[in-house]
Length: 318
Length: 318
Image (cartoon, rainbow over all chains, first blue to last red; front, side):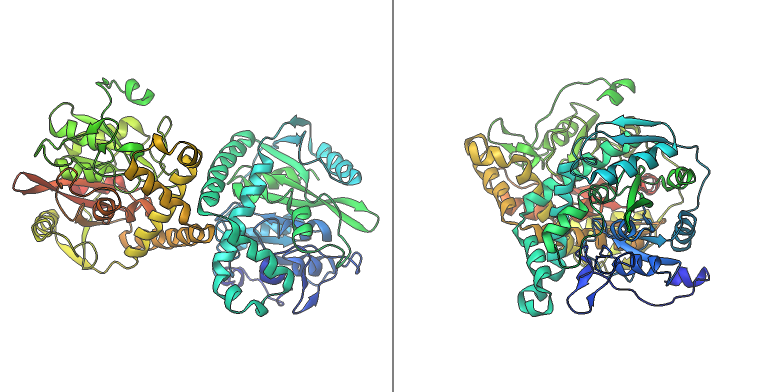
């Protein structure tokens, strides 16, 4: 906030968030639902759903989000705006109520790539550097499986507009998603343990149930999740190197109907493609690449940790 | 090993280690005890006890160790040689059987500071840089509590020879020691879980009992230990800055009699002053500072992560 004010930003207000930032519908039992401006019967995504909805509705041109499993990129995709989860640690989390200190990333949301990077420079030490157009990698597996065919088509077409694409097999993504879940829920349950036990009524029903799953993990499960994290991060960093980005759908489905699915079911569905990149701490830009009817579709562009500049470079081709 | 051979090192052999590197006596039930050359009824420390004993006995001038809770520094102190636990991640662990990938550090042991740094340059990308003599901080609390008075006197006198000392309060050390224990034992139990359950007979009795304590920690305990790790690392890094080293005893007692104390009791005693610096990933040099009778006494010099050069600089004053 101090950095933003110093950069000349005008703060307009706060936006809604999913309860404790743990969920993707922004159907907050204490404050009511946040609606998707493209179809007000549908969710805006979450947890930074208010930021996505405010941008899509034209209430602001810049917004902030936090992303522990996809909470910047999911609302960006479902609301048809831009979201950027930077490299882990790049943007200070001072003043942010944590969900998981191991996996939380703060970052910009905006209506254009240019604005998102401008905001990133306002809230961090990052400065864009000229980078050659990177190689575009399209995963053969996982990221295009169980994805709505129209979404897969739109993402493949958008990736092809960025340059020649290479098809790659990406291994270990399932393990990475699972490890992100173990660390995220253990961290969240640790943060809220006393309140969950002494004041369960302070939590929405769906949320308390989800957060309580954090207590089922053992220390040895957490230890193994960190092993997966080390190996996956090294693997992805080597795969992407200095000169490649991976293109994939942000979500496998567009915005769902409010209340239709919730909690774990919706969380698993929407974070399946995003959460592996929280575990790796890699920077990911989600950009709109078209619509299915009224509903926007997002594409993720993933770079190796610290390589935000090639995300900016490649997005110039959109 | 490849780096060492490339540097012209001649490999003489392997030395003994405490079973699975989890212990400080190097009283290995499969291979028998390793003895302290200064008093063969006493332990050499551990887990890299063979390296310490070989150096003290003049069998070699350079040796390697790994340090997850003190396993380079403790045998260095008890055998009257030099041990250097570098910054976490500086020396590759390729080829090392892990105890805890979160806390394992490989590093040099030698009979002089000069040799230890020469060896560090041989096994890593580190190169000594000229650094001004740092400020010497002497902790008021924890590190001189429950320490043999003769050890405290020898360490204070050695610190005073390095320059003007400043007295500082160091907060959070107990929490850091506990967090190191949670992470270390969870990681170790995760690595050995199948064997511990299916083949308990493969483990020494004391060791199996200790390692099984890793299963008692919950995921939320591990999560909290990582919070402590983040906060302690930030605190210690700020306390030491670019220009200070902390001086403290390496162990609170000299080498104990073989078999007199073992397992958890001996582990807690000997790692109380060393393990907090594994959690912070900070570089620590242990140097001999005198004897109690025949038994050597070691002093730790601690710098902020990445500041190995000021350890080299300050040790020139010894």
